Image 1 (cartoon, rainbow, N blue to C red):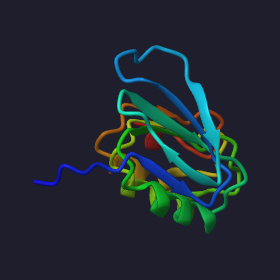
Image 2: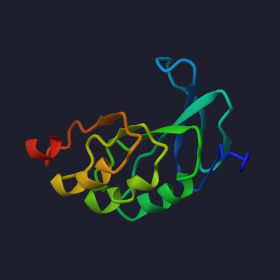
Image 3: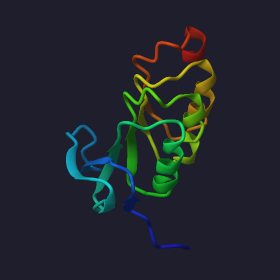
Image 4: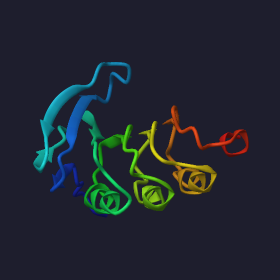
Length: 138
């Protein structure tokens, strides 16, 4: 049994990291720091990462950096208009994510399949993804 958990975010990307208490899911997010750099998520907290100016090539690198971080429950990729189906196919690598915001990304019906494979996803923001049809939303 491995007692070691990875609660450290090590990133080369200009991310924003927010935290809030695990015991208060409705609490407001508070800023932990801005990347790049090393950030430890406190044991009694969960984290959200937000980032802008990604594209289909760079999102894979970010996902590889954060895929094993426990305590990271939310990812905000909103307004990354250069991220589309090709880049979003890497999202299932983030099995720990329960909240995902991909509003205003360049997503169409073919990009929904990877999102469906995210087993822990509980909240999804697809607002302003104007290329999605009613069929893919169902």
